[in-house]
Image (cartoon, rainbow, N blue to C red):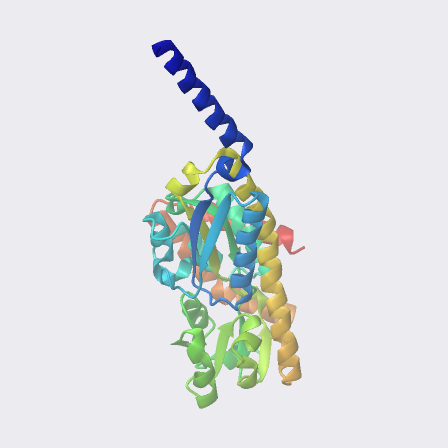
Length: 341
């Protein structure tokens, strides 16, 4: 009798097992759900691109990964985004390194006036830097990829012709750009982008340092009259896209490979997106009658010489922290030159 009951039990288990494996609904594992905190508002070009990245991950994993987007800093504020990922408040995060001053010392190289001429070049240099230097400041997350905006240029209410014209000029800026303003002889007026329009319109500022995309995105072409192609002293800003370390480790190897493949493709897309935004800004500025000023080779060299102490200061500051600032700066400069040939 016992033998008969045992046989029946085994048979039942086999039937259940066969049913489970033959039923696609029951056999399918529950999707891996991840949260993505991004400080950009949803309409921003980079926010749209981040959403496309998430959809591409979902597509290539056949729905095994689902990513929920939280735009506009609704999950974590921009200056808390990175630590929010570290602490598990979000699984993935995108924000600006410079918004958390001192948190990413070695990576400040990306914000220096290196002379970037495009967002594509700045973005490629940023990712080459991470791959080469493996900065410890990013080791507590899994880096997806970095990107960086197009060159931060000088936009003025009155046309200028030479470096001396900047002396005493009130120039709106933020972050490290304030040091660039001082180095060029101007007076920094620290303002976030949303306050630049009023400041320029009311004369609180006479000029501003920002990328071309802001001429359209923030309508600043309505309150300035000229743009200087001061590439020899132009800067960029580094953005990170990172994942919580434990979440990454918990992903199956085949899923990790999908992320790595998509990340590699989106480095290029991020750079293209920044450059497209700059072109849109330039077109808008032309429509508004903005004058574009090209500096001579000799004048460009003068501007570069003025900001050089900022590069030297970075190397010195990193040395004091025991970080390879000199090697990092040299590597980024060489990468930039190769890409801008």
